[in-house]
Amino acid sequence: MSQIKPPHDAAVPVSSPESAVSVRNVSKSYGPVEALKNLSLEFPRGELTSLLGPSGCGKTTLLKIIAGLLPADAGDIEVNGKRVTGPGSDRAFVFQDFALLPWASVIRNVAFGLELRGVAKSEREAIAEKYIGNVGLSGFEKAYPHELSGGMRQRVGLARALAVDSQVLLLDEPFSAVDEQNRRKFQEDLLELVRHENKTFIFVTHSIEEAVYVSDQIAILLPRPSRVSEIIRPTSFRNKDVENIRRDPEYLDIVDEIWASLRTYTE
Amino acid sequence: MQHRPLILKLLSAFLVFGAWEIAGRVPVSYAFPTFFESMDALLRLTLDGTMFKAYAETLKPLVTGVAISAVLGIGLGLWIGLSARFDWLFSPIFIVMQAAPLAALIPLLVMAYGIGLTSKVFVVCIMAMPVIVLNTSSAVRNTPVSLKEMGRSFLATDRDTLLKIVIPAASPVIFSGLRLGISAGFIGAILAELKITPTGVGDIISYSRSIADYPSMYAAIFSIILLAVLFLNLLEKFENYLFEGNNRGYVSD
Image (cartoon, rainbow over all chains, first blue to last red; front, side):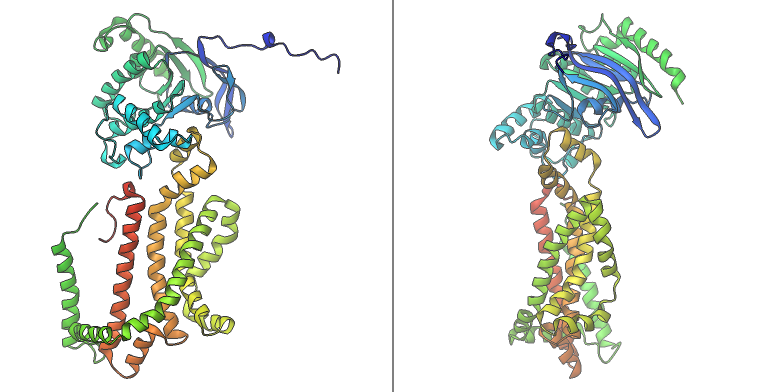
C-alpha cells in the first residue's frame, strides 16, 4: 500500500484553456449498432462548431452525450475541465422539435429553465423578457406556442436556452423544422449571437451550406461507426458582412469540398 | 377557443326537441309522451319540490362515487403510467372492470355491502373509475419524449417533471377520461337506484312508470341528462382555467 504515490495534479491531463468542451475516445452502441466509435473532438471556447454529416452518422447522439442526456459506453466528456456525468447548468439544449410546453405562455416557456432552478417569479420573468426581446419576439410574451409559426417557436426555444446563461449551447438541428426564409434570417441572427454572447455553440446540422455559413469550425462525421473524418476551419469570410458570406470564394470552395467528401455516403 | 354560433346550438336543440314532440304526437308508443308534456311534468316536479328532494338523495352516491373515482382513479392512473410493474399488477383489474356486466354484479355487491349507500357508491365507482384510470395511465405513458428530455436537460427534479411536465402534458387525455368517467358515473347512480333500492331520481322513474305517469318518468330522465351536461361543461371550464394553452377548442361549449 505504501507504494502508491499521492496523485499529482500535474499528471492529470488538463484540457487546454481554449477548449470549452473536450470529447475523448467516446463510444456508444445501440445494441449491435455502433453509433460512435472512439470519437475525439475539441470544441474551442467562444466559437461555433458544427457537427455535419449524413443522417445516421451519430451527430445527434454525440450532442446528447455531451448534454448528459445519454450515457456514453466509453470515453470522457469534459466541459470547462469538469467531467460530464449528466445534465448540468453549464450546458443548455435547443431541441429540433422545439420541445415547448404547449400549455404555457411564451414567457413561462422561456423562464422554464430558471423556474426549475428555483429562481423567483419576478426575477425570472425579467430575465425571460430580456431574452424574448433579444430573439426578436417582444410583444409575444403572453402568446401560446400554437399561436406562433415554426420559426417563432424555435426563437422561444433559443431564448429558453439563453435565459439560463450556460457557457455551452447545444443546438440539435434547430432550423430543420423552420421554413427557408426564416432559416436564413435565423442563421444571420445566430452569427450575431455567437459574436456577442461569448458562449460556446455546438451545432448539429445536415445542411452543408448552413454549416459553412455559421461555423468557426466544422467537424465532418462519417457514419457506421461514426468518426470525425475532417475538421475544417473557414478563415477568410468569418469577419465579413453576413450578406457577403455566400459570395465568398472560400465559402463556395468549402461547400464543394464537403459535398465531394460526403457524396459517396448518399443513399 | 372555438365557439359554436348560438344560432346553431338553438337550431340543434330545436331539431331534437321538435323530433321528440312529433314522435310523441304520432305517437310512436302509448308510453312515449310529447316534449311539452314532459317539460310540463318537469316544471311541476320542480315546483312542488319533489325533484329537489330526489336529487338530495341521488347526489349522495353520485358525488361520493365520482369524487372517489376521480381522486383515486387519477392517482392510480399516474402510478400505473409511471411504473411498469404497477401497470402489470393493476391494469388488468381495470380492463376487466370496464368490460364487466355491471347489472349482473349488483346482487353480489348487495350481498356484500347491503342495500345502503355503500353499494350505490360502489356501483358509481365501478362505472366511473376504469376509464379514468386507463386514460390517465396511457396519457402518462405517452408523455412526449422530447418534453421529458427538455426537463432533464434543464435539470428538473422528478417532482418537477411530474408536476410541471407529465401531468400538464397528460391533462387533455386525463380530462377526457374524467368526462367519460363522470358520464358513466351518472349512469351508475341511476342504475343503482333502479336496481338496488328505489330512492331519489331512480324512485321517480320507477314509481312513475309503475303508475303509467310517463311524462314524469321522462322528466326525471331528462333532468339527469341535463345535470350531466351542465356538470361536464363546468369540468371543461375548470380544465381551460388550469391549462389554458392546451385549449384549441374541444368538445362542447
